[in-house]
Image (cartoon, rainbow, N blue to C red):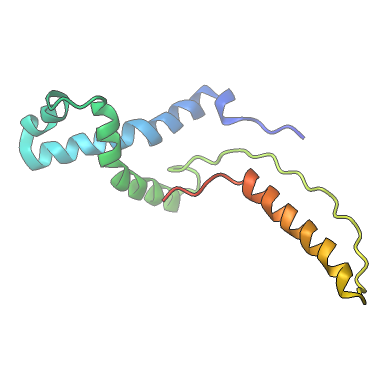
Length: 128
């Protein structure tokens, strides 16, 4: 079953870009202007930063995250666009529930450990 990708729709691309890139930068610029006027806004560009836009995006991200969450409270997916995912399930192998011999437990535990490792490899790393 194929799902429509957000990247296929230019309006969804635009909204995603606005929410993830433009919103944090704009909020950082507004906060700098509120704190120190135009000079504070220009400072990020004249201070010798390698990537002033990335710096502004980082500054504004906490507030932007709050704004996106508030938008989601109004309408789910409005602030944090829903991203389509593809999910597949492998049918589990039938396992004999009765294991009398403790030595039979080791292969089962190894198989569980291998599957957990496979899950860890497939899940994205948590950013903190």
